Amino acid sequence: MIQGGVVTIYVSDMQRAVDFYAHVLGLRLLFRADDHWAQLDAGGLQIGLHPASDSGPAPGTPGAITLGLAVSAPIADAVAALESKHVAVAGPVPGGGGIKLAFFTDPDGNPLYLAEAPSR
Image (cartoon, rainbow, N blue to C red; front, side, top):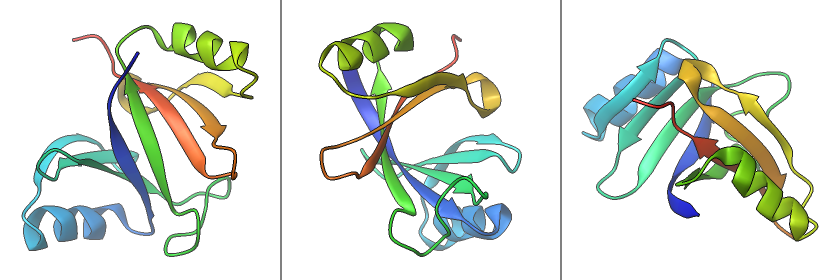
């Protein structure tokens, strides 16, 4: 059910972050939803840039990088499978650009999320 993923980095300035990852590091920009999200290809690893918010970790602090896992089935099915294994999941919730998200943690409390890309 899990098919690939993305490492999310919380950033304080979206344009500055996109410029750094795309132009300084030379990563290919795959998708951008204004200042809500940008996704870049790092040669097999995808990096997502997300703006800082009051509900998320501050850029540059512990937890400011999270792991997102892409799902190959409807996100509701993935959430149900996790919940059947006693994992507390928040979501699914709509994200920017039509993405659906569901948030949970690993046993150590590290933040993880599932992502269902919009139908194309």
